[in-house]
Each structure stands twice: as C-alpha cells, then as structure tokens.
Length: 296
Picture 1 (spheres, rainbow, N blue to C red):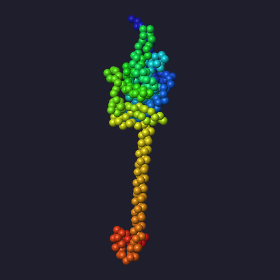
Picture 2 (cartoon, rainbow, N blue to C red):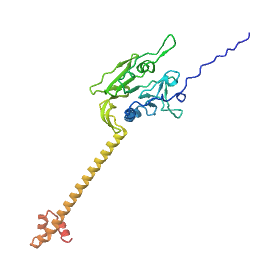
Picture 3 (tube, helix red, strand yellow):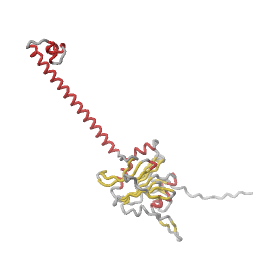
C-alpha cells in the first residue's frame, strides 16, 4: 500500500511587537496627556517596585494593545493613554517594547486609563465587533474591546473638560461602574492604592490631575516631590543644628563673661582685707579657683 503525503500549508505565525506598527499617525489630542501619563508612572513606581522585586511589569503610555489581525494592521489595536501589565518583562529579548501583543503574552493589563479630550463617547463606546452579510466589518468600541476581548480588570475614563472620572471593574465577565469612597477615590484592590483627582501644578500646568493615594489616603509622591521633601527635611535639620550651635556659643560667651567678672572682682575684694576663703564664699568659687584666677 502506497502512502500518500498531503502537503498542508500552515498559516503564518501571528506577528510580534517588532512586526507591527507602533503608531497610527494621529496627533496627541491635548498637552495634558503626556504629563498626566508621566505623573501616574512616576508616583506609582515605588509601589510597583515593592510588588515586583524582580522588575517584571510593563507600563504603556499611548501604546497599542494588539488583539486581532487586520489590514491595515494598526486597526487591530487599541491604545490606552496609560496601562499597567503585571508579571511581564519590561523588555522583550532585550528590545524596548513597541506595542503589547495580547496573542503573544496572554496577560491582560490590570488597569487602563483613557484621558478623553471630548465627551467620552469614544472611550465609552460599547459597539460590538460584527460582520455584515456582505462582509463589512463594524469597528468595535473601546469599551467593548477592553471588556470583552482584552479583559482589563480596571478601566477608567477621565473626561478632561468636565473633570469627571468614571471607573469600571470587571466582575462576572462584565464591567460594573465603581463608586468612589469617602475621599472621592477609587480603590484598586490588587495594588492596595486609590485613584482620584488632585488639584495642583505639575510640569508648569495648574490643572486637575489623576493621582494615586495609599489605602490610608496619603498622596503618592513623584520622585521630584520626594526629593523636595528630603531637601526641606535636610534644611530643617541644618537650621536646628545651627540654632543649637548658636545657643551653645551664647552660653559659652555668657560663661566667659561671668568668669571674667569674677576674675576682676577677686583682687578688689582681697584689697578690702577679706580672706581668700571669704572671697571664695562670696563668688561661689573654691579656694583653689580664687588663687588660680587671682594669678591669671
């Protein structure tokens, strides 16, 4: 019996981050977007270093998360303004990540945030992926992709114009809108920290920013803020040391003035016919001190 060999053409493997576009040609929508991402990344760094002592985590800032193959390829990705993925290396084979390929790593981001320049319609779009009878594909909405495909545990939409922040948590395969706590913050339980709004100046812009707090309501500081506090603490210690030095010098001068006054009084008192013992008693000195000071 002759065995017939059948040639099977296997489909090409899914591309990796080096083979996919890392931008879609769109402008950044507002000048707050990049500083906001940096602020979140900088201030959460100590928490992530404690959580990942091996350094295995990745943070994307306006970077693509690829979840399907399309033509053109960049249409198969969504790019949250900020997202964090636990337990994946920050580099791949020594190369900086250009995008995050869900089909290569299978680890969903824990949290993704969008900074909406508009009214949030795009970021809250729940339109599902569908294909019509004539083969036309309906573009799915971001909300649907993050909820149903990427399955990001925590999703936040910050509408910059109104300052409104909406947070969603994936529960039972669906997003449930979260309620803020008494501080107006949203608790990200796996990290043990809270996300909320903060009014202040950052990178020369006085605005309402998204920031992190610990579970007790203490603001997580940026590296620059921590350095400023350490500098202020060092300056305070230096001032305290200088004040102590000045007090010691004043005490030394007072003691020297008192000693000089006693030294000047000794010959005058002895000239009146007083004994050394009497002079010592009057000046609260020992006899030996009177004799020594009288000969200086």
